[in-house]
Image 1 (cartoon, one colour):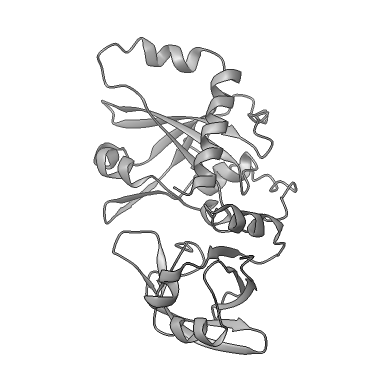
Image 2: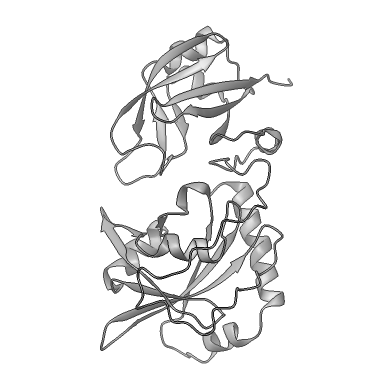
Length: 290
């Protein structure tokens, strides 16, 4: 997990611990020697508003025991049915997740805390208690639902409009761990998705550049993308680094781009996806301050 995201999770976890009622911790305490609840965070990005990938460790250890569908239980007393997709030891929330995110106006930068206490039987049923933290670092005011149970109503969920409180860098696809790269990403404003990379010496000598997974924007297969800089463009191969991993890399063609644009270690590059159909990235270079 990127350093910025790690600190955000720790900060918001403390917020939850101090502000939430003691029901959350008390249920955990009285379980004695039984299996303790499993808790994990997910930072909401534009790329996971329609489908959400569970952490790999959770998927490997508990994915086989999850019912399909599972049920999400926010503090407002509702219950949301979400269907799973399981593939290559990965687990995704799919059908029903989009309706959940829209109902609670989740947007980029929100945080969702999940607590999984196992699968009950019979009948087999997996539940996740959830708490939602918005961009102000406070738990949301859950909309009134008049006690409606959404678990048996796939098609009649009222879709609420997405929140309009979008931060300037709301389409950033990653959280750089280096301070300068984070600062560049924070100040970069675009209506297009983008990601930010601090150029290291290895990026210029090993002819490869690691980049985010770009789920929701790029398919699984190898792609040829275009990198634009100034009035020129370069064709570069994009592929996954390893099967099952979410990160990708730029390989063949990257070295030529880096050489002809005279990139140096310490430069920060913002890759702005200006054409999703043809996979064209406009590359903004912020020169090293060294």
